[in-house]
Image (cartoon, rainbow, N blue to C red):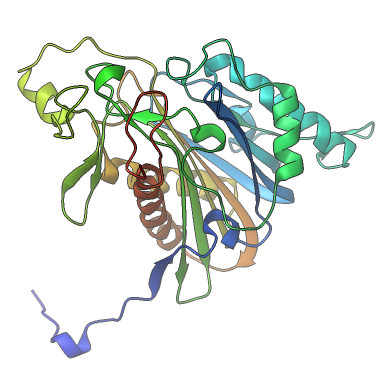
Length: 335
């Protein structure tokens, strides 16, 4: 085995930064609509007319729309927006509002009669935390488009993360509040990767730098000591009622030029960032989905971009719980 002397080791050519998060990628706009009373909301990612999209589905309890439009071979070559929403399947209605307002803006797939916006979306289950009868609507989707900006991404209890929670293996009483997180990373080549995530996981969130749980299932409703959900599952030492309303929804974007096959691979590689920071993850009770967007012209290896996307997404997951405030009776790390 060849070893390099310390002075000959290659220098790191990428760094995580948080100036704006996902919107650091040129051409990406993010809009949130937040209902703090009902504890639900939606988040819209706009990407113009020329973005190539991909998707990676890891969970088994998904709620989604138009995922087929992201697969290679579909007639529509571009995607125009991604919608993340609370409200379980009811929240899919928000994507209708996004589609409607984008058509008015003449954004979409040109059919010769009108432009049909390609708007894939996915939902998470936040009904137990706030008012279960309050869900994202078409009007909320429209408002999210109108609110979309390239400014720094708001994090914590906003948009699709308004009613998000983590650590639900033992029920909501021992869970913790979560939310939206975002981060970006630049490679030495000038390629940029951004990530946004709504963390609503069954499992615990772990900081891989110290290998410790920072948010998750607690020993009791009044405790801040963590159970370690994965260990409990492995050893079957605690009777668990199970909770099927969980999903981590992520979007990564890059200014590297990737084709449809590569962008789907980017989504799969980015999902590794979720597996690094949530445990257990991708369970039968989680609806985890990662979307990917390519809307640049820079040349880059999809493997390099994917490694960067995984790192950015892992950071975004940590930021989602660290920015979450106490709500709905669940404690948040932000107080």
